[in-house]
Image (cartoon, rainbow, N blue to C red):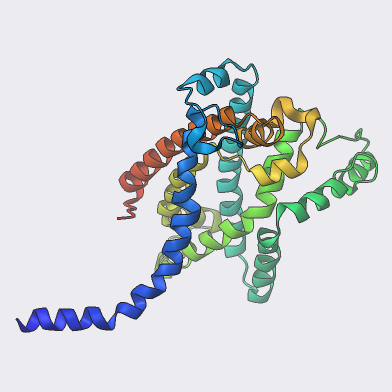
Length: 304
């Protein structure tokens, strides 16, 4: 009886902490769960004048129309290719930079480099887009100026469909690899220094220490982040591509998010646009489920 009274008193004392959760729960309900009612648009001939409830049901016709479009498979291919390249490059670059920074002995220089490479993470793509447009300009850009000095013809990075996907990948890595570097540097601090001391006694050089101690030491983090990134296979970066793309590069640069934007907000095809979004969400949910399963099996990572 006494234990029950103590538990009730503890619950009463904690009610202010539960009240602190209410704003966050309200935001999630309003902005995450509330809009899910709009999924019904994917199965309707939606008319804003009639509203969601009075618009007629059309069943799977929006999906049928969607997969009859000649552009949808090219858009899906672009999304997967760009996203896959971003995932791979976004894993490799932070690991390499973290290993290089880990070898620095001047702490002030190490912190300075960390700060510099981390800064682009805080800038929006609207700002970075303007910077890249100036840097990559075929006529006045610094990059093409350097290429011209080497005898290479100017490249229209943002207007040539061959170069555009790679430009998106490189610029995305430039923006985000600083954040990943800090994650891996934090993982490096968890490696036992005695292992390096033993390796020195055995005559191992820096490269051998990196290969035999450092990389295996951070392998669980590498596996975890790599598997979790699978859930973003259809998220190729709407804000980045929307700021930088143009009709010249639709063939290789148009992705599901930008296609949905044009289909719904420019062409007023609300039903098919909602169908694209629902299709993307379903596939992303499948990949996220698989990624969490792999993360649990390979890195013993659990969210519950």
